[in-house]
Image 1 (cartoon, one colour):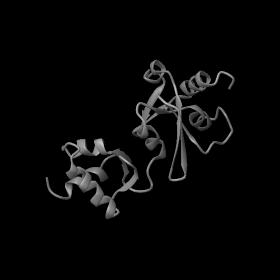
Image 2: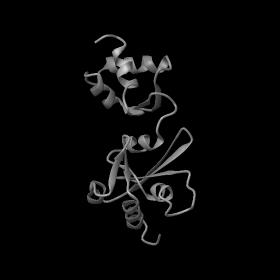
Image 3: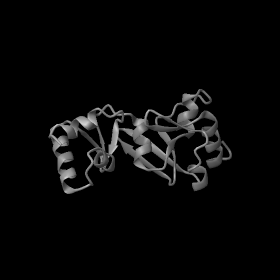
Length: 154
């Protein structure tokens, strides 16, 4: 492989957020020290943006919803984020709410990602979860049911 192949394979991808495992698979090489050194080189030159350990983007203008589902997997965007987008509730939330296997809150680039824990059998059930431009997003019905599952008084 020629030297420019590594960067162009990332830039041509439809994804905006990559894990180090994604990049190793894209480059057809295992996650070795050479992979880490090459990533470090691209970051120092400003050709890639390091979001946090193990997560990279083409630039600072990455898809925040895509990042939300890449931090912890399996996960999908749901709850108030989808309900507001679909016009079912009108309260504005700055946070992005994600269904996951754990409860956590992370702040990256002044954006708060709030992960809410769902039972495993509910989380891995793909009914009502759509894949839209590299992001898993709940339908409005699924988001409402997820919200009621986590907070029955909603």
